[in-house]
Image (cartoon, rainbow, N blue to C red; front, side, top):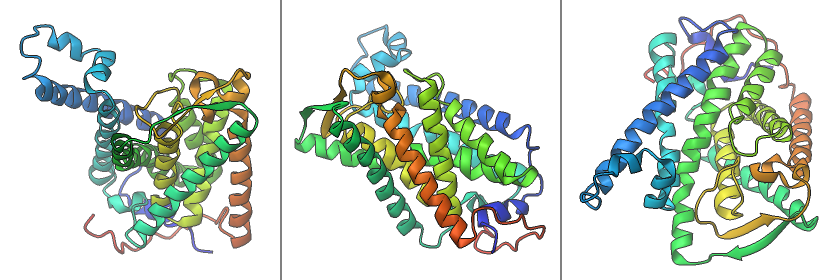
Length: 329
C-alpha cells in the first residue's frame, strides 16, 4: 500500500525541524501569527470607524478592548476574528517555502478533486455536530430558546461560511498539515498522532469553560481528523469538517464554540439544568460526554475503514518522492 502523500511528500523538504522541537515551533509561529493578526485587524478597524468616532479622543483605548470592539462591530467582529487566522497560515506557508524549501501543496492542498473533498468534509462536519445536538436535545440537555429566520440572519450565516473555513483550515494546517507529517518523518506516526492531537486540545486550554472532558473531546477530534486525512489523502476534507463543525455550533444551533459566542444564528439552543459533563458547561456542547461518544464511534468507524483498506499504518517509505503537481508552489 502506497504511503499517504502528506507523509511521503514531507521528504521533499531540504531540512526539517527535529521532532522534539516541532510542537514548540508550531506554538511559536501560531502566537506570532495571532499577534500580527491582532495588530493588523486593530489598525484596520481603527481606519474603518475613525470618521465616525473622530470626535472621541478615547478611540485608541476603546479599540484596545475586545469587548468594545464587539460592541462597535456587532456580528462582524466574528468575521474579523476569523479572518485574522490568515496571518497564522501565512507564517506557516513562509516557513515551509523558505526554511524547509518544499512546495506548499505538500501540506495537503493537492489540486485533484479539492472542491469535492472540501464539500464532502463540510457536509460530514455538519452531520457530526447535528448528531451531537440531536442526542443532547432528545435527552433534555439542551432546549430551543429562540429562532431568527430574518433575511439579515440568513445573509450573515451564509457569509460566515468561508470565514469558518479559513479558521478551521488554519488549525488543521498547523496541527495536521504541518506538525503531523513532520513529526511522523522525524519519529513515527503513532507519536505524531498523539502529539499533534494533544497539542490541538491544549491550544484551547485558556478558553472559557475548558475542562478535562473538553480536552478529551478535542484530542478525539484531532484523531478523527488525522484518520480522515489518511483516508482521503489530502487536507481539504479535514478543513471542511473543522470549519463546518464550528459553523454548525455557532451559526446554526447558536451554542458556544469552544467557550466563545459567535453572533447571529438561525437557531438558539441553551443548556438545561444538567451537569457540565453532560451539557459541556460554559465550553459548549463539544465539551460534553455526548460529543465524546460521537467522536469515539466516528474514530472507530474510520479506523475500521483504514484497517480494511490497509491504510491505517502504512510502513514509512525511505524513497524521496518525485515532485509532481507541486513544482511551482
